View 1 (cartoon, rainbow, N blue to C red):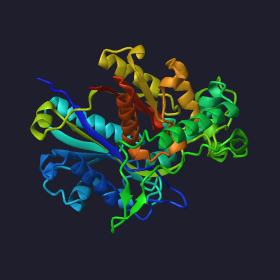
View 2 (cartoon, rainbow, N blue to C red):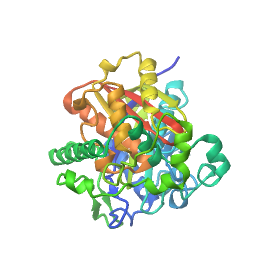
View 3 (cartoon, rainbow, N blue to C red):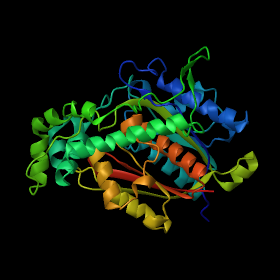
View 4 (cartoon, one colour):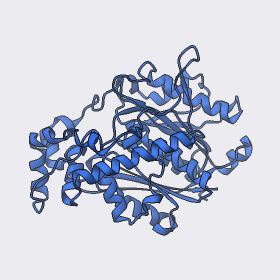
Length: 403
């Protein structure tokens, strides 16, 4: 008999800038993950929490270098949680953190675990994206045969296909920054946020550093296109060959209307009802449904399909969703997602998104879950939907139900 997967707690580090000056650069990924694990122990009030953990599932977009060789198991040992079972590292690009949570929920629902911690980590200041490389990066035959183009060019293709000009994208970015800055000022991030300290216990970072309420259109308009050179390297031609009804690719995305690289870690403590009763935990929410979708590898639009599929799995309609989170890797796909699903602008990314806060790739799904869960509680609402578009046409979506 299937059981239910409950969210008992969710927490995250601040999102730190991944370029100079990078506040979290001195913290090794394993230390960042270990500090977040210990935070669960402190927040739960249970020193024996490690003995109750059936697995730790960690998503990471670039599982190499300081983040490689199964950092999940390594972090359990490093944190002094040797009694905790398991340790699994997964990679589904920037959906990895959310996918880790979905996998943990699926195992609990199937009865193959009672208490699992899941989420993601990415320290991009120490481990550059694509450090682990692969055939879709280095093998021309794979790139051509799969019709894969980099996400930035794919985002520009979305803007070109749907008539989203530079001003529209920049205005979207300004709104993201304004919302994130306002949420930060109001303390809306505080329930899930955990400060990160050095080896002496002194605070290194206790707040997100990237939101900028002082940005204006003039400043954004001065920024050059971010992916034009990449397009000229042959990817524009590939996109137009794949979609001949589009006559050109306008490179309207810049560093201002795309997500800046960031460092961070976000985790979720999941369990079944028996585990909660035994440990004295009160469930904050349940995982209502999860789904994955895929479109042509040239595109960055799979989120709409994934969102509709997860609604069907949950037995809900779009009108049932109180708050939406869509990962803002790029402005154009974010705008298209909102338009295609006809979402009220006041119900999506209400605390700002990755354009303002930064995108620690493997951790961003867990970051989004922290935000939407805290905000559902603050507003006394019920259903939240989270969706992330990824490279190669992938997308992942999750619905949570606050209790």
